[in-house]
Image 1: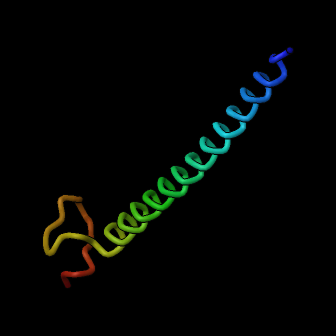
Image 2 (image 1 turned 180 degrees about the horizontal axis):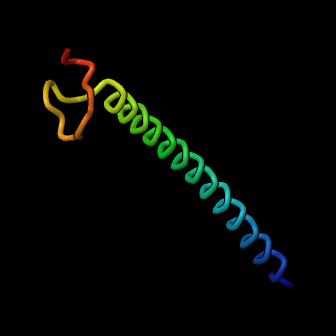
Length: 68
């Protein structure tokens, strides 16, 4: 009885399942990373465009919209 075909099929199925799991993990990780960078970019743009300090900022010549 020749079992080499069965072993090949089992390894092939394990490889396919491994690729499916890895691709799903990669998609989840990339979505999570993209979302985190998006939130970071949003916070940075908000703080840099409106100013984040109440009075004197440490940037020379920086006009803060909160203090008139």
